[in-house]
Length: 104
Image (cartoon, rainbow, N blue to C red; front, top):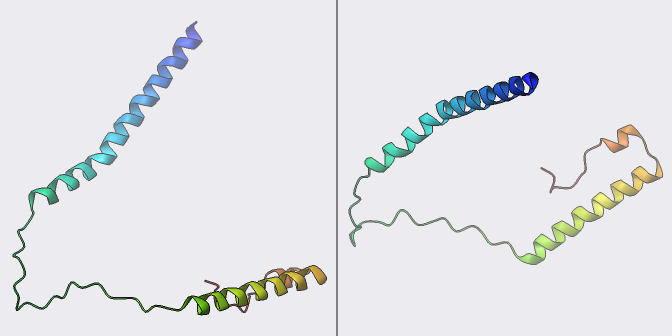
């Protein structure tokens, strides 16, 4: 019974210390979240003579056929690399870089 009470006391102490350190660690975030809400600045409405600089940039559209061709080329290169490794498995052939442009 004494060992059970000792284990229970130590567990409660561990939970209390964990809760205390969590509260200290998150106190700075709560204060930082509260401050920007109080400092909102009113933005005037755009006039007709003001250039609209907030337009999002339109990404260049690439045709699907080109993307599919690149993907097929990548798959062919990877399959060729796998077949060459199966034909002659070496450590060097396993760690060589692929010639595919799609690798990061």
